[in-house]
Length: 189
Image (tube, rainbow, N blue to C red; front, side, top):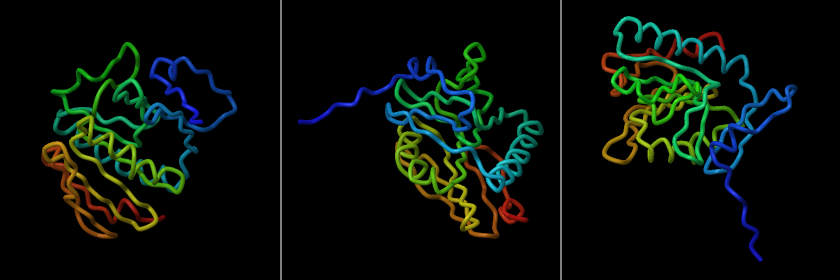
């Protein structure tokens, strides 16, 4: 006999109460509640370096806004993620729901920093859903290998457009003129 699991909806997810002592984050992946551990110091250092560059880019170009986790990004009724870093271009700012305090739709750029506990979802279900819901560019930052993979939405599918290890430059196709030298991102780790 097959036991059916009830998928959780976004509204049910938002209404859930978690223990104040629970330091984990939760995401809704294909209707299932997934517990994420708090980021490590290494993760935070990498994130901070990338965020500073994106924030500077946003201020300089006035082209959009950068956000970071934890922040609900609602892709549909069964998928609500907390991308490590995301960017929304000005012309798509309508997906920023200030009233609810969430993002309701696909950002232009999503960056996930891999860890042992998240890599499976980041490379699997989340990547598939970012692609399905139209995130234009998806970066996977791997602290262990000191690498960054860049996937760009071509038609309805992601294509690996850049893979840089330890040294080199990433150029964004979603954010005109944004480049990132990766060596400084992984310095002092």
